[in-house]
Length: 442
Ligand SMILES: Cc1ncc(COP(=O)(O)O)c(C=O)c1O
Image (tube, rainbow, N blue to C red; front, side):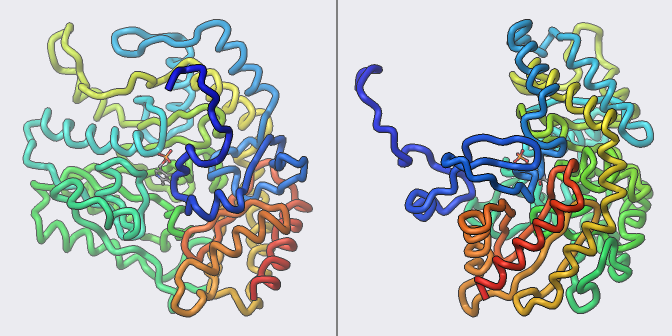
């Protein structure tokens, strides 16, 4: 077909990810613009964003300073390679991120998404051991119900069945810790459950099974997000840290959701008082405006790579768009907003109000459990018998079409993670509208 042939402007060509496409194209959920805590449908209807887009727009939508920074950057420097070259804003942003990170995590490798961040961290862990002469450490340990993006490594260490089962054997030499959720012991807990620290001992069992000398890294989300907001049991992360340290295994925290204020701190590592060896991030670094991700590594890891001849590349990994100028500019402007408006502290202050508002749904007959920590919460809905996922899907659709609200669905679980600029009245609005949705669906 010639380039100027008329193209049909219909919905068919776009294959949406993680979406039932036939249903969507029959009854689209279309977003035309955004401002603050709202999206707008093409007909102008205002939609309350109860999910910060996809856990990313922590500073709210279309913030003028971020928009301007991106516009100015596009006019000044559109692209610069970061293989063998550099541009100032990527360095400035890396320094700013390092200053927010805990402990001695002070070097940042940029990429463009959470999936790439996790892939980068896993590869860094493998190469790190090899450089140290410990190349037998190739095994990667993830956790059931974990989500580490969609690339091969991340899918392999991930623990959500539907994300794994279609894709064959993935990466060899992977094992999984048990997840930490137990409804009988933890139902309707606000914050970290008391029950479950002992589940960290399973790491010792895996070490006894495989031998520490074969294990490179453990990767976990400090709070599992995609599987429905599972805060870590009290003491669990501390135990995991101790066991990793004892056996020379690198600990990676996937903070793609928890990074940049979701739990009231720059990173969940700070909130939980546990410092991993690598933190991965994405989403909130640019408040979702320009794709960006990264891996923050400890000085000790970075220094381990700095041993070859002066002209030799130290890490054979990276992306064309690592540290892209537009993303770097957006990242700097976003961090400025977080700091100037004290958004991490604001999230922390709002946490009890948000938790109480979410827990007020407890009496509804469709609610099976509620979990909440920081400005992240989730409700498990009572499933439609024999049709898993239908209740959750119908709830999300009804919320959008009839209550003008965006919520996140994962099976029969609905998650809430509003922009950190949310006000108390808007939190009331979210859960008031959600109750109406539940009443309708019931
Ligand atoms: C914890 C975690 N890791 C990784 C990812 C993947 O990020 P992306 O979709 O940007 O590749 C996500 C996405 O939601 C996530 O929640």
